[in-house]
Length: 82
Image 1 (spheres, one colour):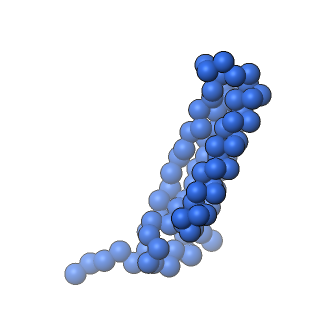
Image 2: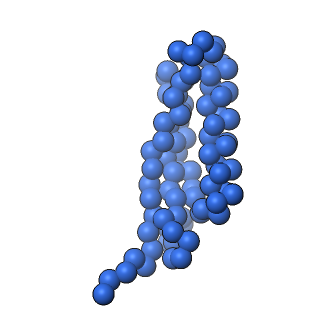
């Protein structure tokens, strides 16, 4: 029988620019940063272990975030977060 001892997910998230909705570039960028903070808080509320690997602002104002997340709460995934 096999079972998962530990697992981690590496996600690439794109928080897209909102300029097409009539916002200025600065306001749209501020909204993107607020969305990222909301995302992080939702992970913390769910008690999901995570590490932001990279957070990069693109030329068009969107933000690309690479995040490692714990797959489940049963296994010790500390080796993935070192």
